[in-house]
Length: 174
Ligand SMILES: [Zn+2]
Image 1 (cartoon, helix red, strand yellow):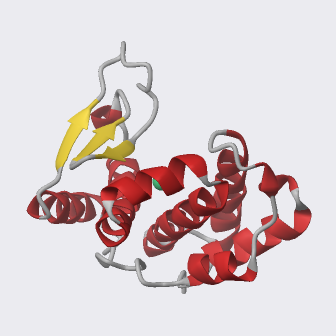
Image 2 (cartoon, helix red, strand yellow):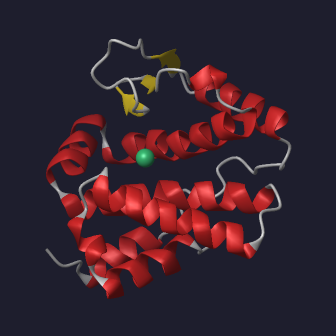
């Protein structure tokens, strides 16, 4: 599979960037993201350990199923995850729940677009907390590896694609 120019263009859209401006204060941002999500009529639930998807956080129907042990994580990690999931909520509202699921599950191109848009918010969040550019670089490396392996996006084995994804992830992270 190769990405087409229109896929790149979609991923580049900054529409979902900064829905909630991270303050850099983790407690404050956690409260802000939680409030926005609840106000939109979504629910947060933590998966039980026995759930086969216990180590995944996903958006499903009007529910964010948090990975098991989510509330034991440091506050900065919790708020960063909720900022990322808020992007997925907005994408689902725009695309429609059913179409979002089909695109996400069955079309690797779309999975790449939707996750690149959501992880870009994570990068921005990291910057807001005062991360250095080498910390941001290390995080982007981690994201690319995660997308490639965990999200089964083999295209990220390609050097050019990696470079392109890295460029898009940094859009807006000023
Ligand atoms: Zn995601």
